[in-house]
Image 1: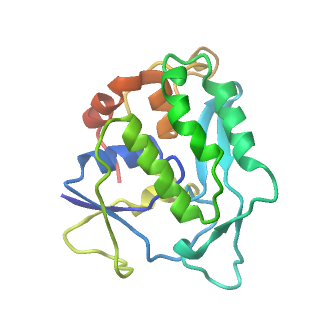
Image 2 (image 1 turned 30 degrees about the horizontal axis):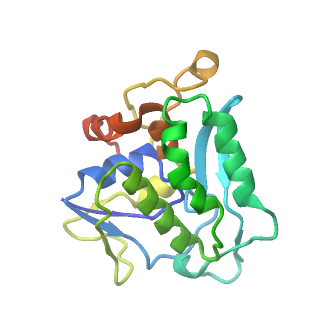
Length: 206
């Protein structure tokens, strides 16, 4: 099965279910950038519930830009803020110490382009999952790709597709219960090596 999907910032569990099950993984790289999506946002489980980590970007609604041309705004030290947020949210999780050293370089390197950075994040996560990061990219934008499962809608945070994933233990679930479909980081820090088995066993709604 071919699957076309957006490269997003530390993608959701739904994204990874789609990617894990793809025989051919195709990333959409020819689309226009859209605000308020998971292209530059990851949602984690903080002490007060859902917490969005947003990568600031330079983008003007007046002049449409291709996603691959959108640059990151590094005026504020957002990388340090995101790392501290992860430490605060997951330092008590079972596998935080096991993976954080592999992820820290992402928050210390110089980054200028959001799509390029998202691919670096994806590569790091696939490495943590001990999976090969093999993919193709689109050559043109197709509104309705043929013979392909279109999972690009998973990047839309405003009209998020409801999932029904099996609960797993989360750090603050005693306060806010299980929260569905967070960033892959939530699953990784809580389930560790069992993450791949979990992803393979879930059913995806599109």
